[in-house]
Image (cartoon, one colour):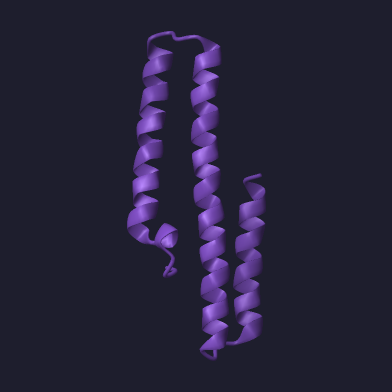
Length: 93
């Protein structure tokens, strides 16, 4: 993991816990037959939170790959890893 605070495992877990809570709330909304509009608002909020985590992970991978290359790792290997990460990130959008 990266040295940036938002890339650290504890921060990512906090974000994931928040999303987990949002999803549980959405489930309760469905069970309680809340309005579709209100449910969609919460779904969009959860999706945005997931996209933010994806962005943080992509940034962390880029930073990590650059640091490894700087420390002597093979550039082509790290470029391949970064490309694969970018491909996965793009599938989310």
